[in-house]
Image (cartoon, rainbow, N blue to C red; front, side, top):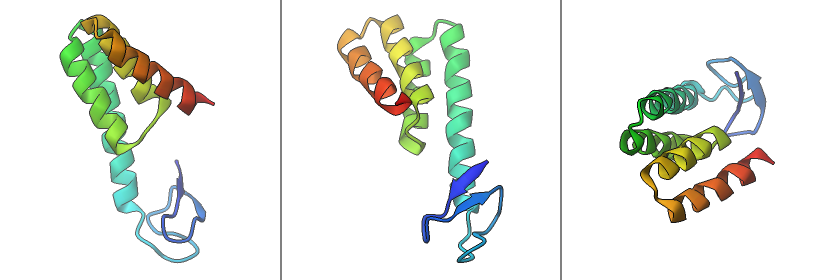
Length: 99
């Protein structure tokens, strides 16, 4: 997984430390793993027609890492819950992140 060092902006490939400045990239990797876990959990909730928990997990994933996938999950969860104003907002975020 490619990670950009927050200290020097060097792109690193699956390294525990930045190859340029030596910054510890482990916390960044943990945040990414947590965001992916929340996204996967939310997807399972959505498959079970549990929109409330799916939205909660999508929001958690979004707050950790703002991805189009997290926004799409939140959009679908909002549709399931019939929260159409929120669904529109999540749809716009998903489209913006996809570009």
